[in-house]
Structures are given as structure tokens and as C-alpha cells.
Length: 314
Image (tube, rainbow, N blue to C red; front, side, top):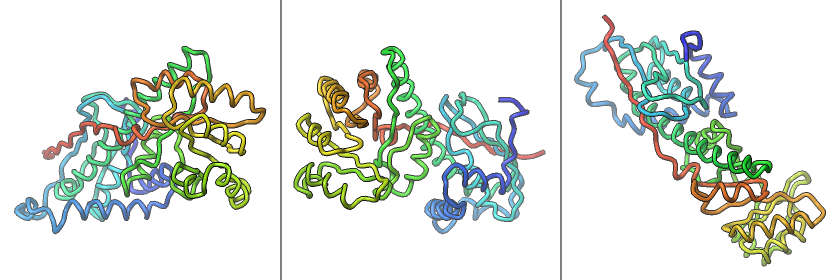
């Protein structure tokens, strides 16, 4: 990172980045930030009540305390923009979401009102620490998948996350996986027709569920079926499923399913899911399947360490 890479993060730039990154109106994100700030501030920061007003203008640096993949830069800037309101704020960064940062790098810097910076500190750091942890975890898993596929000389399966996200943070956690190069699975129940184990029981089995889905689903909707054993896999294959999820299949059964799919005479995509870890994902990645989905990309990610430092101007 060099000075020439420095980007000034004004409010218009922040709003433009938020819209581009998350695909929703900036107003939606401002509302979320207001909720998070209200949760953290409660009735107000008691420590600041004792400080004479006006509080001084101070330099601010947010510093990486370890190596990681950065995520949440524009959110941090937006938090401080919100706490400042009409009070002048200057922020800039030579970093960007999805890029590797090293311990000691300054990921965001600027100048603002001490009171406003302190009000936003914990929310801003928590968001980026959480999201950067997810991006870092997802990038590690993706490297394992790509290395295994390269060694096996096969096309790498696409790595996906799942709906196992923190309530209220799904939009942001799924974005964090994209910053690592991971492709998103369905965002919510209305963004994909997926017949899982309990759906199949309510329909009375795979054949009935698939027949009903074919009759009732919108014309261009693909149908995915979750199966837990090879006998169910064959029913889903024969019933016309577009995508079949192999849930907690052994390596031997995945291999058998791939071979059966190759013989069926039509294009069916295979997704492997269930207890995929950094220890076993490489083995599965080389078996010729299309997708690997892992909730661990999000729910097993560890927060990274960020520090905010204020400095008086002289």
C-alpha cells in the first residue's frame, strides 16, 4: 500500500460503496448502523459526560494487530460518519475490502471530533473484526479447495456458505464470504427452491415432493434436493432434480454418486455439505462435484484483532 493508493472516504463515496457492495439502498444500512449504535450507547457514554464540551479534534488510526483479509472498511467509515452527523470528519484509507493486510498496517485513518469518534469506536471495530474474520476463514478454505483440485487436475468446485448466519447480520456476513472469493448460496428461503429432509417428510418422500415442485414452482426456478444416502440420491436423480445436495456422505458414497450422475444422460449438479472442515475439505474437493457448502465459513470464523488509536493534534 502506498500513498498513491489513498482514497478519501467522504459521505458520497461511502454511500456509493455501500450500495455497490451490499446491493441495497444506503438507507437500509444507515438504519442498521443506528440500531447498533443505540444498542452500544444506551442512554449515552457516561465517560463522555465528564468531559468538557466542545471535545477536541483528534487524529484517528485503526491499526491491524495481525495478518488478515480485510472486510467492512466502508461500514467502519459509515459508523463514524453517523456519529459525526454534521460535524466535520475526514477519513481515508489505502486499503480495500478483500485485500490482505499485515500486522501494523493502518487500515483507516483521519481526523474527527473526539466525542464522535469514541461513540463509534466499538461498533466500527466489532463489525470489521467479525467480517474480516469471516473473509479470512473463507479465504483459507478456498485455498485448500483450489490446491486440491489443481493437484487432482480437475475443475475446482465452487465453495459456498449457508444460511447459518447471525440474525440481523446475514447481508454483511454473506458479503464477507464474497470478499474471499466464495460464491453465495441462497440468501433466504425465497431465493431458491430447496427440498430438505423435513420438507421431504412433510411431502411424503422425494418423488411426491419433486412432482409437486415441478407443478407449482415458477418456470425458471431450479430445484435442489437434499439426500442423506445413495438410495435417496437415485430417487432425486430419477425424479428430475436440477441440483442434489449430498449431506454427510462418505468419500466412497460421493464417488459412487458422481459416477451415477455421469451415467444418467443429463446435466445434474452435485453439492456436498455437512461437517466440512479444513482437515477434510481438500479430499472432497477432488472428487468431481460442483459445489461445496459449509456453514463453518461463518459460524466457525474467529474475529481478528483491530485497535483504534486517538492522537491529539498539536
